[in-house]
Image (tube, rainbow, N blue to C red; front, side, top):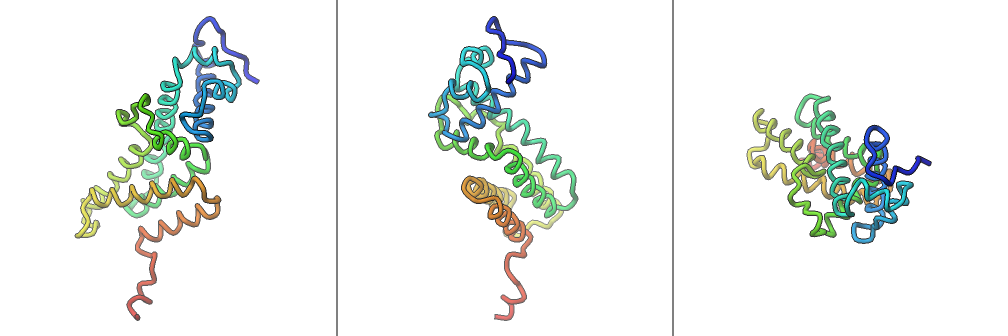
Length: 213
């Protein structure tokens, strides 16, 4: 177990940074597991392998701790989606990359989605999350909007669909996918991701069969 930080003040340097990151990871897990209201500083500190008193050297209260955890997840999320999109060419392939990255993110850290949903559903007034622009959802929405602007510039967006409507539609799909991830077994979730990719590519239905009916 890592040694407990000094009670004389907040540690600085790499050791302090590592402890701080451990606190954020413990917060992510605790809030994902029991929700914002039920997650206590005591339980978070225990999960981080430290005392409540030591934790308060890093964060003054639970609200600030959870807000910083939220920002930390967002800081990690945005570059991942940007990198995934930049690794491929073509609008459809970029949207596929977004869906694949959602699946990877959930696989790599299954606490991310329940954490995000918990603090949004509870809408804790002291978190003021509406004031945060750099959020998990905003990060993904920004990437998707840029892809759809590219589609519009290339003239491949459907004539009856504008950018805002298209962005909203993809956003609804992604939010539904997040909720699905909360309860679906891994195999079911990945099958759903595959079906969504077919839907976006226009391959959800057998067009030849439909034409023959």
